[in-house]
Length: 247
Image (cartoon, rainbow, N blue to C red; front, side):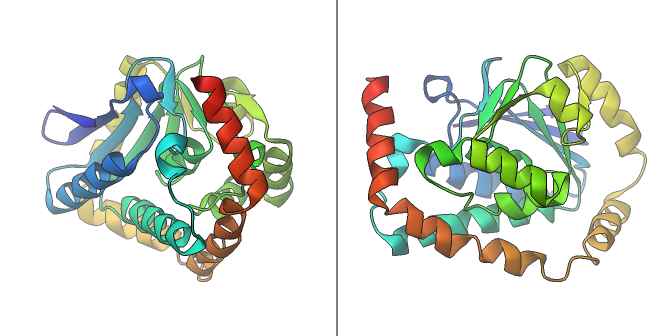
């Protein structure tokens, strides 16, 4: 479930409201995000789109493993990955500024989600978990390409290989996030972004990607290996063990 709040006419704040699942992404959330992104694209007054999770404990805990565990074929896994990549690409290409406000801990797919946004700001207490490897998975939603863009190949490989969890302070030091801020500080941070219209925003964002002509191909290349691991017995057993612990 996604709740939306307008702050004036130029800012829309969307909140993933699934506290019982630590705001994990499920099929309903995907559908609602798709609809929301479409509506933002068509609303010429919106200059800033903010996404956060409900509460203060979790931003997005990743994909909802209980729900996605029903995906048992490689073909179905590929379709889910492609759908998520399309959603994230559409977010990136919105003619407004997109901000992920990491209000709590984020893991796996939550990290991949925030990297589709133009800017990432975080609460001081948030933790960032590159934990796909704990489930015998690589990123499959375009996250490896985006992570390499943000921190370079060596750090990206290290964080994924070690399935590391990082503090917000560390993520600011390495340039992964733009700022550590409270909600009030975030709204102050946004104010200079409102000075120019959507034509300017769209042009600047488009020009920033000109230097990466093979970017989309690199993200698409993540899908097949991810899907192969998704149906691997090791991944299945680790997910089943994780779900059993939660009961």
